[in-house]
Amino acid sequence: MPSIAAVHTMTPVQKNKNSSVSESVSKSLKQEAFILNRMNITLNNRDTKQIEPVLTNAADRAPEILKEDHPRSLGDSLKNDALDNTFPPRKQYQGEFQLVDVRIFAYSAIYENASSSVRTLVLVPQPFKSVSFFCILKRSRSHLGHKVKGHFQHIPPSRWGTYKNRCGFVHCPVPPDTYPAFIAVLTTGMSSSNNVLPVNYPGTPYNNLTRCYPAVHGNFTDVNSLVTALETSRYFGTDKFIFYNYSIPEQINKVLLQYEREGIVEMRNWRLPLPPEQIHYWGQMASIHDCVFSQLGVAKYVLLADIDEIIVPKRNVSLVDLADRVLNTKDPRSQNVYGALMFQNTFFSLYENETKYMFTEKTIAKQFKMKAFLHTNRSRTNGPQFRSKLLVKPEAVDLIHIHIMEKFLPGWVMYVVSPEVALMHHYREEYDRQSLGPWSQDFTFIQYSSSLIPNIQKRLLHLQSKLGIQI
Image 1 (spheres, rainbow, N blue to C red):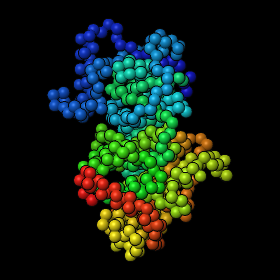
Image 2 (tube, rainbow, N blue to C red):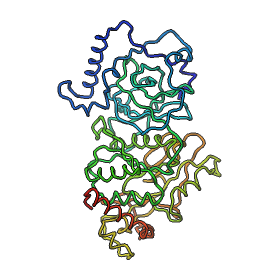
Image 3 (cartoon, one colour):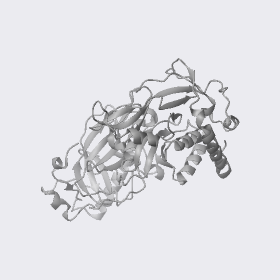
Image 4 (cartoon, one colour):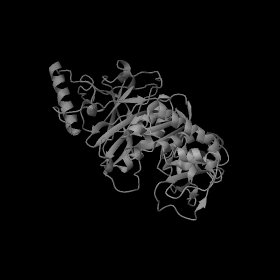
């Protein structure tokens, strides 16, 4: 990432001083038509909700001519047009896909204290022809702002299949003690920006453990499994869940909205601006990076796992306690500090007969379709990095992958959790060819049944009576 010194100056963005009001309006309309054309929307037949993430009002979208002024010192460039110099209070997280350039879209902007920069998540074509990015730092949406050069960082591809799109970050350096409220991203040769993103600022961490799920889409409709997953994860220490909403079915949406009203769930708009088959698993590599970095200064730890995966501790109930004990301690081999936990994977088969093992709450588990308690036949434990999932300190991450840490920041290393301490149970409705023998019976999860099953039952009954959810 370039240093602030390498930027030299922040150049104020200026309007053409000779333009009349009518010319400005005309340019605004032309720009709107240009953006709508890129989004395959016509001026005469368009859905305002569809273009809302791309366009604000005409005044905010007035063309901004990026013109190099006479060289100035940083102080002079900010003297009469300064950004805020007070660290902003934390606000509700905001992210939405907005057009940058042809086939390039920006989703979210996150301020990073450690580097005094803004990290902007973008979708880009694959293969990606390297282009230069620039950032406009703004104190308001209508502020013309200050131009700085950005630095692009590719996020690693999924490694499964070939897709037309992938993702990355544009890092935008910000001078010390200045705090833009908004940022626009553009590429070389563009005279105006097509996007204005609010900058999300951290604060004092108030969550211990946030759990991030990949994008939820129409294929998932199992309310009982969702509630089982949420209540179980809460019992083991999670206090916040983040869901990315691509196309959530009605019943699932009702459940998540109820949890959101209680402050337990946060749902983020994930309306991809491209066909989902053109990017791996509804943009999973983008969403997990957005989720992890959005928790800087929000949560101590972040857990990345799917709805059908339950991290089951064997020696202590709280995953937070486990993380507190291990993370921030030194690896005796390297003297680096542990910055993430890796949980090994085992598969449980839901397609086989229910367990014959008897336990007190089994009748309730069967009545409310709590499948995880009713299936105890599991595959062998897979080795580290093979379908594993991670719990991370967000400040230790540079780049992450679905099952491994792609790259730590300097000084951090991985801690692989022994299956004797905690194991990731992966519940599969269909046979998975990577579920290998020897198979065995595992009753670990059932030991929590007397505490968990009443909680899950209570929640399902509440959702049924309050919202009419079918259970």
